[in-house]
Image (cartoon, rainbow, N blue to C red; front, top):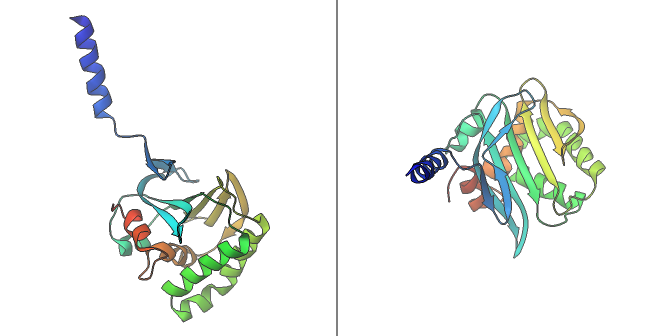
Length: 192
């Protein structure tokens, strides 16, 4: 009888704990992350970037609180994180070109002119890293006190890029009116 009671208690404990991770295309991502300033962030959603029939990367969005509203994501105060796990090798220039295309598609010409020096700074940082290799883990963190921090495989790269407007422009690549891929937008917003 004690054994049955012990099994029941264990099952109740297991059932009471939320899942520790989510999985997409063989990539497991944690349900939460801790920002550089110690803020706990929740996995808002994730998506799979594809080009033709190639799987390019899995992207996950972490926020201080979950939301399905892209406008709320862009206006949400506090730390945020975009986590990218590369599924194939992509050259630095190709990676930058794709990001720049996404920014052009989702930001006004006026906004892009204001962001131009920081977009160039980001491009130089990515070029300095070189190829985004299969298995590489890229994190783009917004820290209100520091700017956009780029971390690759756990190592901080370059100096933080100033301005929340720059981070919002990055987010619009995936969450804007003309996202890089519609199902990524839905996935990052917690959809199927």
